[in-house]
Length: 338
Image (cartoon, rainbow, N blue to C red; front, side, top):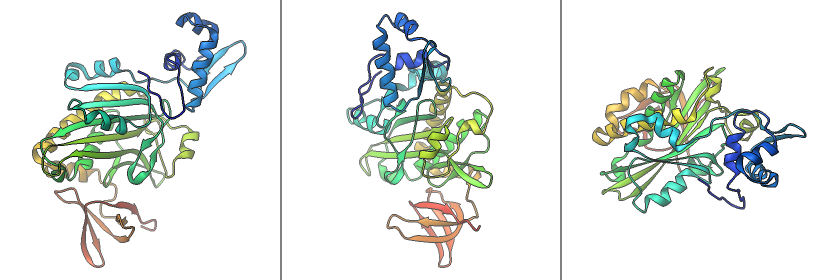
């Protein structure tokens, strides 16, 4: 499926050609032109469109074109096949390129888009992070998607939602043998590497609907699969990818299928019981439990204290010089001297 963003105009051939090149080997423009029954100029335009998206395509006279490395593209059929017999429970869309899967899903959600819908993208050009940050992503280096879950409860009753999503992602990562992942309140997944906490994944939740009536959550997720040095340089904080944690190759279609099923399971529990039932599991993955941290609230004020984990509502409890303080939102960081 093709999606046009900003001033970038892709030809209908751009992603079929990228799929053809996905084995990381050289392929001549002549062979590709014959394969797609088009001119070599059409192939050139398709590759030029890919390069406008920041995709590196090597061109060598006499050998043809190749990508910097082999890759697996997301495909709706492959995701559904990996989900198996539960696939009919989910509405799955895979876009070639989109500005933001959260933005896309928010627009369609207002028109009654089905419950348990997932929109994923091979490339997200303007992915959103918390507090106005941008989530950096590149072809084959990240898994970026958004998941729509409709609640009978209002937004006021969804405290702790980002934390249960974190629990689901940890479960999925463990199934791919990433056992060292930890959670940072309220919505990051970290890996400790050489004594430094580095970000592996992030969660952004946007709510629609009434505070007390029915509501819908747009759950945006970005996971680093195999970051290039170029991509790491664009990220404004220490980052790590799954490829640095495990030796096995990662099929994003299979991984997304695992996550969708784990998300559905924990969200169903959360809908029935709230966060309290999953609190102990979240605490078992808490990266900053009993550590001295800085907490920055929405007004910019920073408080230092020792983290005591979270309560049944998913709020952070911190022991400060002024006693126990409870935070429903905020940004935390570990004190470097701790």
